[in-house]
Length: 314
Image: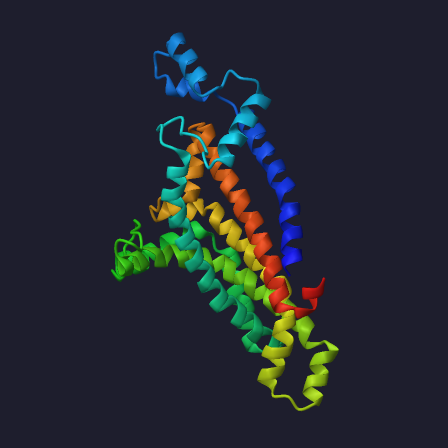
């Protein structure tokens, strides 16, 4: 297993380098000049030249990229052109918020989507399957912003059970943090749960029709053992891939959900940086997102081995 992980890491290094080059290059072709926004309304030429020299914007593009890579290798993602705050500080402030929401949303999705998918596969052709498919279709069809507004109207305004907006870190108040995170996590979990349900159902239907399942039933194995120990374990492979991909998308930021509930997360940070043409923040945030996706892919490979012991000698 260690050899497989090392091979994956070696493959991930050139991928990360290529991604960093794309991030840096594409950012530079965005319209507008951030220096003009920083200089204020007067836009004194001396101030413009000073700012360009300060942030090395007059250097050739390859030289800017190499300097940026050297700083990143030392843990320095640069300084925000708008607020003059280090990007690492902004990431450290916003990332835990999105991680908390993403973990809660993924837990809700796994605890609902996978059991519903198993139930729909086992009860194929019954009203149970129809109901599970209806829930999944509803989860994929209802927009996040509409569901968020509906929950605010019912839960917060009408029933007065949970706060309508805002966010409190776990370190400040555990229970209040859960209260402020519950509704946005449920909104994020709705569509993820639907996708997990549909993929789990498809994988389970394929596994339940396999020869080893028929053999287990012929040997008199209990039905719960056939479903959970034989079919589910082999059906988990594509589900593991889907979970890691969806979790990476959550970490990239649920912009609409964060806007509706007034949550200062990673997605809002990225959108604000794009609108403000804050190159350093955009580059740092997107690089963190790309690194997160690569790390999750590596985690998926490790989970494959744990789920399927036959891969341990691959």
